[in-house]
Length: 238
Image (cartoon, rainbow, N blue to C red):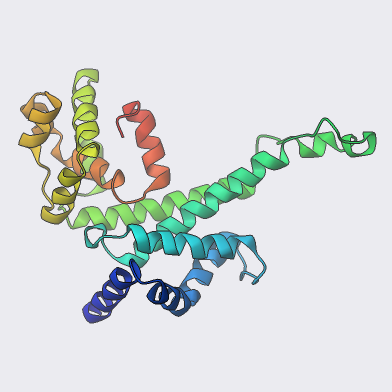
């Protein structure tokens, strides 16, 4: 299994700069791409489906942006594909909700059918499933750092002052990619550097080290849904 993983990574790194290798990699992993698309569509994709083209492009984006520190490539690619498909679905929903002022009276008679009813069960189901998969992936990745979801819940900042310290530390880390690379490589939160760079109390960060592990992972590994939530909690610090 480990040799297979190394082989995939070698292929991905070659495909980053070799167009032919990229085409061959996409062709080799079309069953995987179709499988991820099928999970989203709840049916096997047809060759004419836009979603399949989007998934292929997302796979290529994953190849271009992947680094070994991001963990297993196929898990990373699956997150990228799901994220792009959700983005496309939302965009289509917004477009369907737009009414042209040049529409005929007959076309405008269907106005009520084009207005979102505020409750789209399909989208809600997709979001729940996508969120569940992101949480499972994050939970597995946190295990490598010796942190569990229970640890994160128990270790989350409760006071606004402490939350602000964590927000500033995370914002500083995101503005310095080398910090994030070292964090993923060493599996250690660089508390001293974050405290100095963000000008916050080191002890405050020490007390919430496990929380910082989770948030930094979310901010570096393509967890689109979870990152959106964290951005709200931290008011833009992520």
